[in-house]
Image 1 (spheres, rainbow, N blue to C red):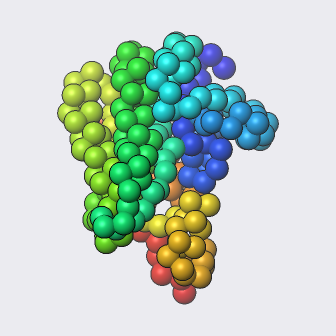
Image 2 (image 1 turned 90 degrees about the vertical axis):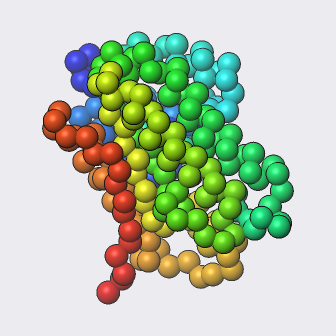
Length: 230
């Protein structure tokens, strides 16, 4: 068991993060990252190779303490995120700050703290981005700007860490059937039709493909879009 690679998945309590944890667990020991310790414990009970890793990613001191316990790490999947939307005219500064705090700054700091272990393992960093990180739409400014920043961070990290053997993959899913998506659709005043969206396990399959790539291959970006329901 000690020789089994270790993966840390943030946002593992639900949605894409939980699906990624399930996809990786057959071949990895998995640390389930999130703030809700009780829910993480429930998730871990479903996965024999997983254990909870409760921490508030926006708390720098808590993050330093939690990462100090990780002696080796092969895969880091950044799936935790928030979506505060609004027009430029209406969105308060707090919405922009919250998106950047969770979607960008927490990702940067967690990655920075774990770089020594990732380098030692010639590991892999996967960042769950969004279609909004490629094309911004009206009304999505605070969220889209954070995802464009996340894309830039991934590009910089890849350029800096590839010489150390670390692979970096950005995954850009289209709209996915998650609780976050349901909240967004409700905010838009639309009816929710889950068949119109990607399934979380479909995104997880893309993550697994990147992580499982042969040593000579580096999947740098993966873009997923829902297929129209037939």
